[in-house]
Length: 315
Image (cartoon, one colour):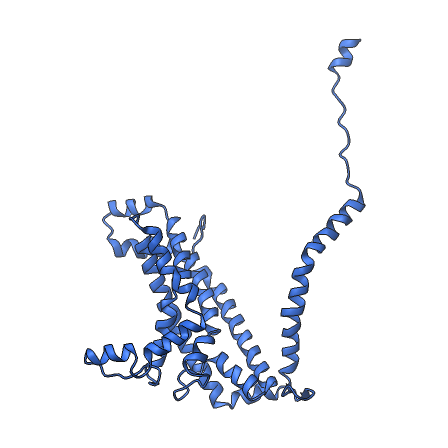
């Protein structure tokens, strides 16, 4: 009898169910941890965005009550030649500056990907401009270097290139801004370097056996394997380029000159909002920028299926 009792399967105890009050406690705890972020989001991001959306349909100068005028501010943008100039300058900067910066970042990342003595020092050296490049002090130094009689002007004159100062030349000030943003290639370089570390060395070895040269390896192996990283850097740097303000304000003394050649979108928005006190007009400009950046992001994601390759992708 005792044997039968010992061999009988033990009855499984029913799964214990957590009391409903404990679930409610967990939910409340989750919202408690989220509260600081929610307060910051609604007070500092969502709230001001909704207010600016409302102001974009009003005439408001900071000193009186907003006056509802409907879509007039958006219609005025279409007839504003300075708005068109700001769009032209900003698009030129985005289209030229972003690819040049990413190309420089990828080139340096490929050089630093090889093991050599002092590798950490060189990585830090090339990354440093990204930490200080967007600061006010660097913009002041950059302006001092490229004005009439600056070090760049002197070197050019000594080499027989009497171009004068780049800051006062409408044809050279945009290349100067492109040089400034290219110099800050450290952040995308680090991301490219992390991506290069993930490319299997067996692929290059197999390509070498087949007789592929360096350019063929770069086009057929490096670029496809890095395509997710390239997409990320391209999206991030494009959005960042649309928002350039500090360097444009300091180098042009807030005027966008000469001849509107450095009138970036955000600088013109600042002029309309905080110099002319046309906050409704500036709010409309801000929302146009949000829509353009959102549309660009949407298009890049939609087209990424054609050229971005992920691990395990069967295409």
